Length: 262
Image (cartoon, rainbow, N blue to C red; front, side):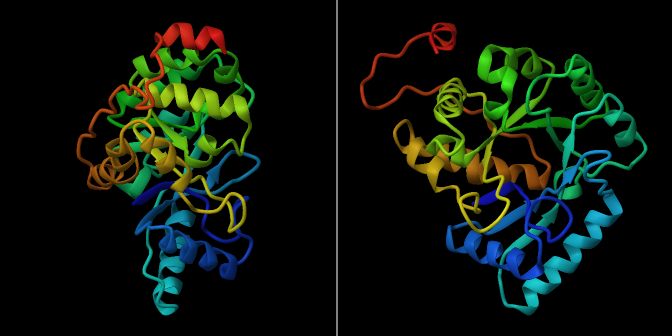
């Protein structure tokens, strides 16, 4: 498996504070079946002022440390950008770090409590740069929790979505799990990642999602944790996530009826 969203670089955001803790995360990821990760530290002006050059250097240094420790996890560079109106301008200037630094996909985070009024336009302008925005964990955003259908206009603007594996276990609450399941059933996700920040409850495991995926279609687990992430790393077009019907025999209801009934 390949984890496209993980806070594993030491000391540069709210991930591991030390190199030792970061290495422990790498070991856990390997033990959980992950062979490669994209390190995605936060970039949020005034809070996490990481820049492209600094992240690239940090990834190179961390990869060297893992090799010295004989930890076989491959680490690619990336970042999780707080969506700002001028993010596309940074892309045009070469200042923004795309996932795996291949110029194809950009991980963006919306403010936790809601959707900025400029979100649709900002995502569209990123697409105009030839880069596909990937919205991180929409199932944990306040506006989407209140009205999951608000995600659809952003997808129509060309964005993709990445869900968090532990959203499916209930770690972030019952409502987050409900919305995550709805988005999964409707084929909204292109990737599932750990969004790990340490080696504890938010460690680098994707198993919570794989268990859930098995209730629908085991192939979707491989698609969202291995096939599409591998295609992203190579800069190739992704496979579309199918709509799913739970294999337990529960009656399938329409998308909007499920949204409104929660």
